[in-house]
Image: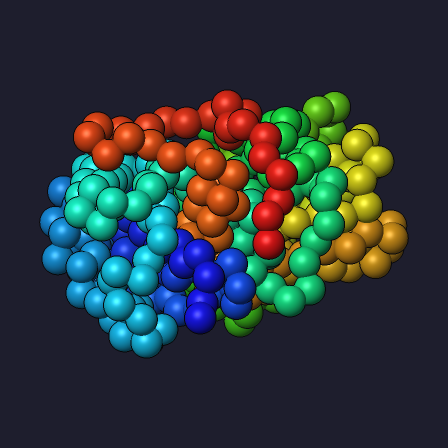
Length: 342
């Protein structure tokens, strides 16, 4: 018999993710639907369309996950959902479905932090990072370095003062006339470019601290493209190298300042192969171990929400069933510490 099963629902932006996590067996099933095709013609996420699609997808995906795991809805012991940060309408869908299901099944329910899901996603792997560690969280909406003492004990060391790195990738891709989503398209084009043809600045590495700024890098790419419109691949390469090396330099600085020897890299941009190569090389050079979630868990997914929900629900945390609570903006440092439960 599978013990204590947590259903995770992720609906913070443009991907509907469902996961099932068991105390006995770990992750037992997960499903994901990406809305890329829906938003492509607009060149970015349209919040209203995202919310409507979550409504259509979430229940069929839950049924598919239950079928994959060969269990019934009544076998679920608890439900976790993404309460924030994210798009308000999209978050409301996950919250409403989670609360309704939990109320009908008479089981506990809990809203969890989307970025805590990314931060702890490497714990879904067989080889897991041990606490404490430094985490680099990089996505379309966030770029931050976090000192992680334990689950729920987070200190933000530095974050982007303007564009997140994923946002800068997307905007630069748009400048180059690439499709949506821009980050993967730019990375693919960069593979055809020659490193050194253009040299882009590494923003804010010449000053102390661990903050980031990527809007200037995006502007530099626009100006370079205006002068060299036929050299898209080389511009993409220069942008990617500058962005990933900037992240690497700040990660090294964070490890040195905190004395940590473990780095966790998570979020959508952590799937970028150039970034992984830079950080792995840096780790070997200074004697640090670098952990990444597998590619399918870099982007938004229900597995990470089920995992975080499992940890917190197992410790007795839960919401009431009668209020739909979301937090489109939610500081990671506000979370409470818990002991890790397998």
